[in-house]
Image 1 (tube, one colour):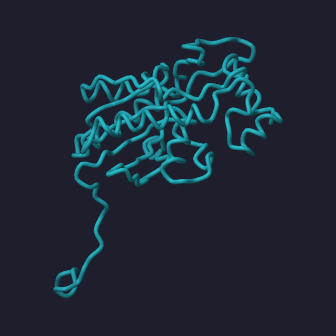
Image 2 (cartoon, rainbow, N blue to C red):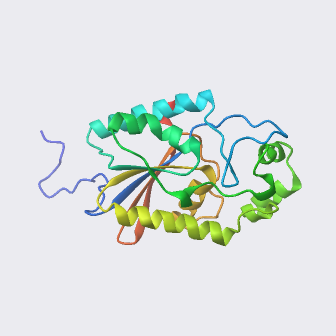
Length: 229
């Protein structure tokens, strides 16, 4: 006996992206190198530019294995994007090698600029100390509460512009975007209409998924770390 029920029964169906939709697999880079208070680490265009921590390298390999397996199983990946900061390139490297793709650099997806706290582990130290300005950052949900930090409006404009360009370049395709925690939080906020910091706790090497079609965005998953368990 069939499990479909009577001939006029209508079963539930799984989600399928509409023809021409762009699927974005938005990945946070792997864990970056530890900051040492008072020591200025590598910088690129004023931004802190640490390499991956050894644990981050393991995370990158596991991420690459998972997405490469999905690609082989039919969930094809057509392009990989990274930012100007080396931790995203290093995170993307195992997947890019497995698929034979050359990552595309999108400068406007670099991390939010933290102004006076950008270098020397200052931001991490302030978080651990529960600094009053850090409390205000999370109360007001604005990174620009930090002295000299990037203005919210400028951050919003560059992130939105970068995502729009990627979507326009890849209709009907599946794209991996390796970016940063604050960037991903802002992308998800824009996609869902949530509070600005509702998605501010994205894990390293996690996968979040958006499907964009005809100007509308559907969130399919957030902070998927099954490959790291």
